Image 1 (cartoon, rainbow, N blue to C red):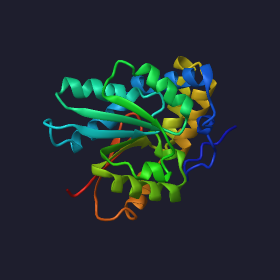
Image 2 (cartoon, rainbow, N blue to C red):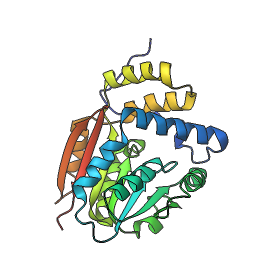
Image 3 (tube, rainbow, N blue to C red):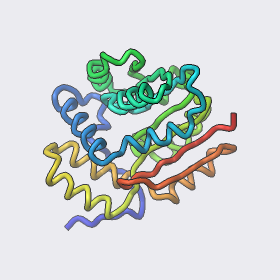
Image 4 (cartoon, helix red, strand yellow):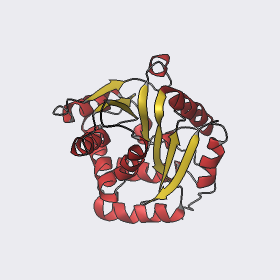
Length: 237
């Protein structure tokens, strides 16, 4: 019987880590992940954090989402921003060119949403600047040492701050997700990667350890349903 070990982050890879994943398999998996986030209210964690950083409705706010997948959260943010009279310039960043092609296709009606296929560790990306950078269910894909480097990089690239929305590494979350998939998810990649993602997620002590290596910033950590951590890094502007 498989023993659920959440004492430390797993090193196991996810199928979605393969940037060459493409075609209907990728399209279906991204759609299923979009549905799971919608059903469990995960995107609201990011939008709530974004709202805490916003300061003005009188000028455009440049926002990037790294690891954007099919761009679902950017479309939701675009709709939310329009409803609340914000002016957003939204950019989705993903290293998977096939995912970016799907995102562009699905976002054709959104004039303020664009996409870039680029590696976030590349020099080209490091030269980009935004007001706010979002990292939704992306941080757990990296090793601890990469995370520290990436967070410091994102903070330097943002004018207002960074919003991170990622998974709480927790046995109950793992068991509940197994049960959820039995009823609602008929996709092997989404099921397997979802469970692996939980084991690659974080406990509060992990985030607190990262914070010690991201100096001179205002940090806010909150636990949110369903088993998410919202980590807001607000810059001293």
